[in-house]
Amino acid sequence: MSEQTTREQVLAGVLRDAAEQREVAEKEQDPVKRERMLRYARSQEDLAEEEAEAIAADIAENQQSALSLRVPTSLVDKLKARAEAEHIPTSALVRRLLTEAIERHPSASALTAEQIEQVEEIARRVYRESA
Image (cartoon, rainbow, N blue to C red; front, top):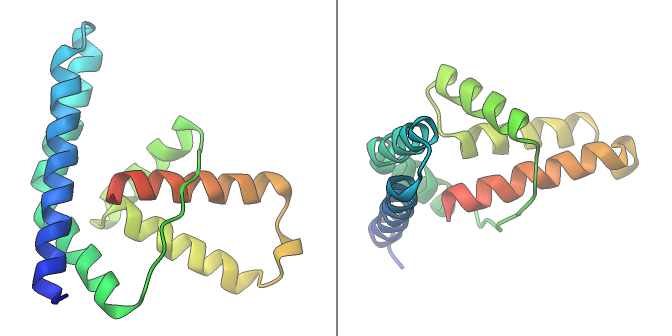
């Protein structure tokens, strides 16, 4: 599989997810929630090319596995805000944070059960966003 094919497949997936998010948002009864959901879908569409490039580059650079986890909404909001401030995809930020955390604490016993659960939650969110 060529890098271009991978990028096109990823782009198609990102755009498909954004379209699904838009459909769900348009059915939302609460106008505030609907607008927030539509704004998110538009941002996903706007970043689709960039996200596809980043994901394809990551795939080409090294073999990856998906990790899925749940995190509190407040943490997701903070991750998105930080990623936006750094002008990078949320998934790239989470990968970097996880890598830094593992390098700082190579022993699994260095993490508490709560920290491990939080890492798992972040990874699941990243998987959903990048799938």
